[in-house]
Structures are given as C-alpha cells and as structure tokens.
Length: 291
Image (cartoon, rainbow, N blue to C red):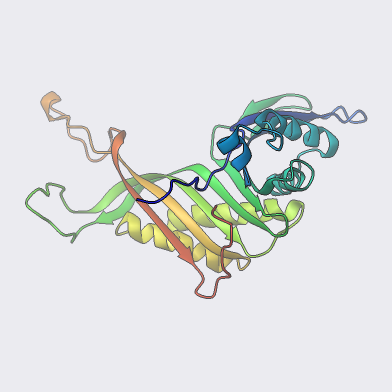
C-alpha cells in the first residue's frame, strides 16, 4: 500500500480579542476599536510533528503577544493594514520555518455616545483576511451577519415539483436573509481607502437587495455579486453565503382571526442555504487569496 507520509498542515491562534482605546489629551475625546484576530501559519513543521523537535516552532502564545505589541506600537487603523503588518512580522521576523501566514480579522463596531462613552453596535461585522507568502500579499474583505428583510414583493413559483413537494407557489412573500460575503481585491489599498471600499461594497449589497424584485434566492445572489463587481472595478471576485430565513404566517383561524401576512413566525432551522461565486471573466488568478 506504500509508505505513510505527513501531508499538509497548519497551526495558529484562534480569536485573539483586542480592544484599543486611543486617548486625545487635548480634546478629551477618546477612540475605541474592538477586533478579533486569528492567525494561521504554514511552512516546514516536520520537526515538531515527526521528531518532537520544537526548536523552530513559534508558540501560538507568541502570535497573541504580537497582536497586542503591534497594536501598541502602530495602532490598529484599517483591518487590512493591521493584518498585513502582522503577517509580514510572522513570516519575516520569527521562526525560519514559517513560509506563509493568513490573518483573519473581525471588527466589532461601537457607536459613540459622547467624548468618552460608546454603545455596542449589534449589526453586521466587517471582516478581512490577509495572506502573505514572504513575497506576495493577497487581501479579501468581507461582511458577516448582514441582516436584510423584504416585507413584500419576493416571488417563488414555477419551480420543479416531485411527489414530496408541498410548498405552495407565491408571487408576493416576505424574504429575509443573513448575508456573509467576501470580495477579492485585485490590488492592495492603503489607509482609509480600505474603509471607503468596504462601505461602497456594503452599500451595493444593501441597495441591490432592497430594490430587486426577486424570483428566487439564487437570482438575488447572482444580482448581488454582479452589481457589486459593476460598482467596484477594483474587485475581481465575490463569494456569497445566503440563508433563506423563513417567516411563515401564523395560523390564527382557531381564534377566529384572519392573518393577511401580518403575524409571522421566524424560523431559523431548518432553512435553505444558497452559496455562489461571481467573478470577472478576466479576473487575475486568486493565488493564496482563499487559502
């Protein structure tokens, strides 16, 4: 049957939580940034796996410490910039066996109340994933938990039916989803350009969802990706994850009441799930973007 060999492997630190408070002594107005960072490293790790030799194995505790130290030295700024700084540090400034790094970041927004107080914003989460192989860096920006709800105008009819199909056709239903989207950049940006690109992409997703008259979640998924690429020429590809969160009307007939689609029951499980990729025909190769 042949020899047994050791295959691909990686390791890292999951969910390093970091809150940075910036102090402005002149104005008394503080800033607050709250992020979660996950590191993943790949390289030549045969030593620890096969021989118990840890001489070139960087502890994951050191990954965590680097997150805090770099934030103190340089601040956080835009997620992508911080991820690039951390990835380059891990590849160039630590163990020689490390060949590439992936940094996944999430930003948890807070809304300002006054000069020193904030309230937690419970909406969507901005994400970024940076991959670096010692020479080239790739950036993927995204959004998690973008909750959207159309109260009318969604359709679903003329679908294939087998002997187990009981779903009725409809030309006017409510439609809710919780979008996770990731988009690949063709080039690296800097500073506030990252945030501007994120906000433009997020606004495109919201505007498309809220204005399209859908015939299926699949149609909405493609329209979201297509219009995002049309509105953002610097993006090469978008990947979408869209659950169809059902809200059937409650049956109030036992109580002598009608229900013209006004009283709904949110059902999170089971739910339909649609996933897809929309990309430019001449998009550059993704490299390690999706590693």
